[in-house]
Image (cartoon, rainbow, N blue to C red):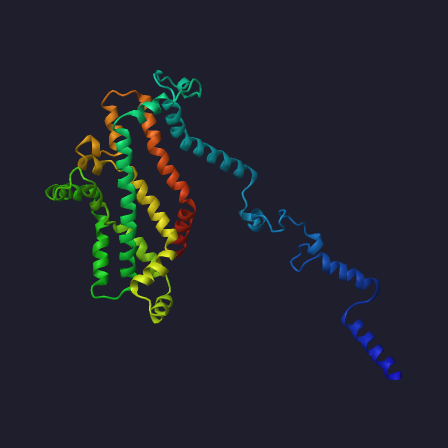
Length: 337
């Protein structure tokens, strides 16, 4: 019994020595709980600014010194609104004017969305050559996208992961094509295609555009960052190079393939000069060349703009379809670069 009393006394003495007791102890504890070492309130005394999910909002994670003031946020909002209106206005004007057939253009009255009619679209789609132009553009764009992506992925994989003599010299020689202006090589390419009988044909229109040095460079840089151990493990399991490329490389290239596919599709869909010199007959014109030819035939402005809207819809739909992969590809390239 005496031993227990002595141990209790020693425990009380130790507690008293380690921390204050009585009212002063409670006051000191409250003060330490309310104030952090840097002088700010802690726990319950610090106001929580978070959303419904309990996570802090993005504004709370930014240092207060870097947060924009109220005036800065207002100026930023006004500038973004002005930029948005300036970007959307040409498309709005094109759509509204295409829905006003036979009306004289007078600004700003013609831009008001009144007395609209879709007869211009019917006239364009009923024309004999416009559906053919649309089909030619679709074939030119889709086949070129598939060809460019396949060749660029194969070449990028070879330049990034295969070891052969003269690899670097071959790669940089091929990449130097980017510095050569397109218009310099256009006339020699046309002469060569003409001697081969490629004028007014799909293959003569498509084949010269498949060698894309920029696409090969982007593919090579993307595949180069993939770990070599993954390919070595696949070879140890008995996979062939074609199986490695199809089963491992291509699934990992989805973001960059979608990004390049979007760029190549937009480029070929809007291409004008090369289809102009390769498509000698009206039946081999693309949509951009055909719409330009409508202006020389004294076609009403509403029908010309209706053709422009028809040409714009597919590329806008392609961008919406690949937007997620497009963002991932651009972000991934920026982080790796």
